[in-house]
Image (cartoon, rainbow, N blue to C red; front, side, top):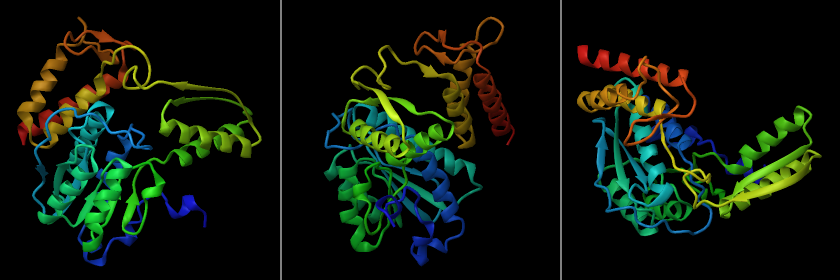
Length: 321
């Protein structure tokens, strides 16, 4: 068994302690909202770059009223992309809970600030409040720090890090590991007859890992790399120069899930603001410029309209419930 198999990105639910896995529906709920959270990770955590503070620490939040308590440790107040990704993951966890029919889960969201000390403190707080399992943290160093607190009491840690070196006894990774993604992409391309490749990777430690995996995968498949481009990360959220705008479907999703969570007033406020972002015949673009509400990008965008209809349906059900 090679290293990638030992440190699999798939969390082995069968390894949950018997006293935890017997709880009705727990495995399915964890798999659901943890997978949603992992899908939101857009931040490579290789290296030891400390994210600058994005603001004061966020207050702990509790979602759900179930008896099974789950700690969610994320860098919610960290600066840069880390804080954005963390907030998206927290929202995804709330959405996943809303999709289940009254799960017996209580989510204890804690802010670790993107630091090892913060991760230890947040993990200890969650355990003191009765957390039986820890989801997170996001960064490799924080994962190791949280594990030091959780391991003595037998609390499993299911982290979102993409650094396989932190996987250990009682610490599992639920994330998209770059080596696995690169191997699958290159293998598929070669199976369709492609032999020449160009790579574009971020100019950081994460990009170096991706580049190494890419080089090895192409060589194994008998292909060749004709160019490799590294782009800086100080030019925007995605490494591309130019400002970012709001992806309209995501904003409608926010309204939909706030409605599903019973927060109808907030959901309707977002939905009504979005109604003012359509053109004179009610069509929506792919993106909306924050502040002005100006449509931008692909137009009209069917995906936006589908999301709008879904949100409207959810708000109608919430209002009549």
